[in-house]
Length: 67
Length: 378
Image 1 (cartoon, chains in turn red, orange):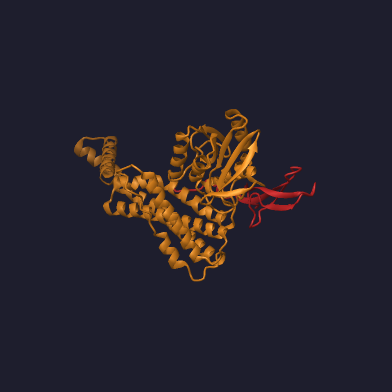
Image 2: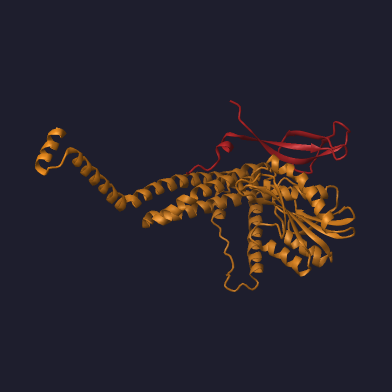
């Protein structure tokens, strides 16, 4: 009765990613979130067309812990 | 031995051993019934007190952890000049007294005044505590202190009813509290989990509105239109869009009500529609990231902003449309989940369809992304 968090939530771990998107060719690159990242922040040059990419999304994905 | 005694009893009373067993059963169950009648409630009270006591211990741990996290952040990131512990403790017990409601005339303005005073006070005090003048750091500190205050208040209220129920031996007080405890613990857990996202400036689920509208604001000229709120003008298929969101990447919610009022009444814009995008609490069974459409002012909070938006829309006969992204309370205040973030593309498509269906070329449309804009610039 006192259980507060669903068992699945307790077992899963959240990993946070930043998605860099090129506004010209639309290429998306997924990388681990770094402190200081925010949506619309200018990121690395696009590996496909060389244009300036921006962080388009920051989100967490749940994953089962190994072991 | 029992055989001899039953023979003896049989000899005395004329009852068979089977009858004796039956009588013993009847006496036992009658005794049990009387015992349950007399002490059943007390036993339940005992179990309820144990259950609530365990929950209360959890709440205490959560409250202390959130306080420590806030102090650590003020010291390590905010570079507080002195030990902020005493100031933080005073802050946790600070109360906001809501205006009297027996005369409802002008009540919303009074609430707005009290809430604005409180928000200004919080920012000024946090600003005085931290030596880091970075607005993101100050806004995160404000949010961390708000979380610590909320958990402190939850713990105090639950403790109050626990002690009251114990003192008065009030069965109904304790049973109601026992029933509510799982929900209270779940919400408190969500608040505590929010601390981790706030500390590193990650967008939270509630920020889906700002994430969606930020796509229309990138590269456009932005201007401050209300406290912590920015506006940019964009264009879509011949319509002029007035995009409003809180100023990111700070952890602000802004004043969208004031902003929309200014656009309509001070800038003289005559919008054909106001479209609001916000996170909405899902019901159990609904999927995270599902989109719902509707009409009305899609905004939560204490009600001041909602009132202002409804008032301006009603006065100027502007239809209000809502696009909502479903999520749980935990998902709304912790780091944005993939399902919510990926809904932003569908939100934009829905917004574009609503604009095409409800307005025509040459029209003005106000679009507001509602929610906490932590980690979401424009």
